[in-house]
Amino acid sequence: MIGVIFGERGAGKTKRIIKLANDTLATAKGSLAFIDDANQYMFDLKNAIRFIDASEYHIDSPKMFFGFISGIAAQDFDLEYLFIDGFLKIARHSLDTLEELFAEMDAFSKRCNIKIYVSITGSEADAPEFLKPYII
Image (cartoon, rainbow, N blue to C red; front, side):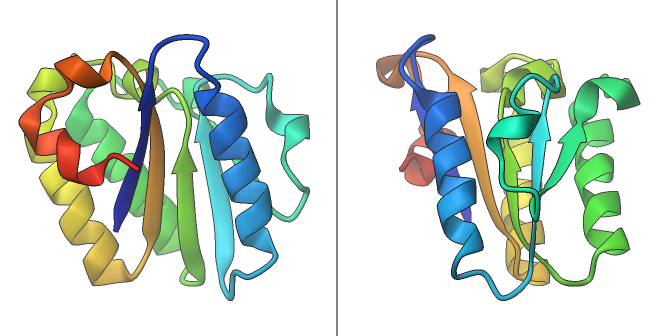
């Protein structure tokens, strides 16, 4: 399952995904990881949520990003939730080129039983068709 928090810059996407992660911790049976493109919000998360600053790993393509999240899941068999803030800054590609990545992530989340939430900056009116079923 993939859920996309989509909206314009300044619409509160980061606050929303942080709140979602913190609130989810109360009912989660497995572990939670939060990936961001910087470490500025690290202290806004509850300390039981694993924080990962993706900028330290020099991700430069959608395939590398997919390998990155696959590695996180391989390392933590109890991973139940994955939150990704600043998705486009991490994936380093324009949204309209990421249909294949979303298909891979969707299959991955179903296969591994991991719920993935991502925040994406953009106008909902301009969202590509492949993304619309994921927007929450």
